[in-house]
Image (cartoon, rainbow, N blue to C red; front, side):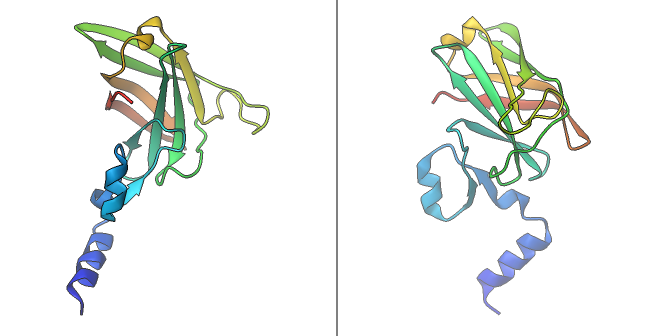
Length: 155
């Protein structure tokens, strides 16, 4: 049996989650790795073991941050029952809380408490292109994820 096939089967048997990469640089896609692209051009963060993704999109002009809850392949929106996402960013030496509130969308039928989109605004987002943060909690399809460490990169 071909060694590549054996390795692929073993990885699939073990769950294969470690083979999935988030793509921050277009060059990674050329390597043939299993990658996921952020549909809105933001930064992707895995939530759970290949279960979901959270895409964060920063708008420096308005000082806003939008979060989209996506499936494990970052292809489809996944609705959350959370009314908000509480994020604590570290800016310099200061902790900066930021609440991303659930957004209703009449076109998709999404409502607060049943939506995939969350938004928040803070003036410090206009001048802070990257920062580490922790998401206190997020409930997706009945599973509560807590203390999710992220690092939002510039770009």
